[in-house]
Length: 163
Figure (cartoon, rainbow, N blue to C red):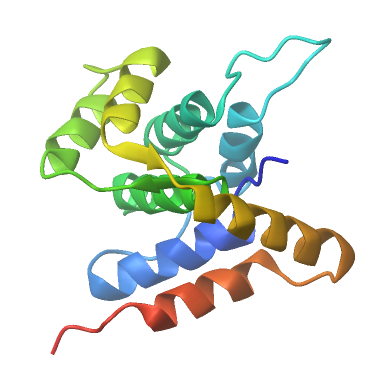
């Protein structure tokens, strides 16, 4: 089962990013859900983004291009992509060219989802132990009604803080 980030989770990421630097607020708050929906599209047995990597690419592209936030769209897209992949069994290492790459998307110099997917694929690897995380999160969200954001907060608490 694929797990997409919720709009609340993307808003949470955005708040964290903006606390570091930027301007809080929305250009169009409803577009956050639209970005997620585009990546997860499935219509009449047609799935334009058929696998985890292309869905991640569509999510990244959507957040950057549809620009739902006043500031921090590229950073939010990158963090949303990291966690989308994590939730679905992949480890994504943010490469040094990520700033340049996301700027190219924003400037419409990188518009093809398959090109974005190739960049994500090059910097990702599937992790067997993360498949268990996917099953655990899926079960908890569906049956125990644990909000997705609680998992992310727990993961973030494990990340060492800079001093």
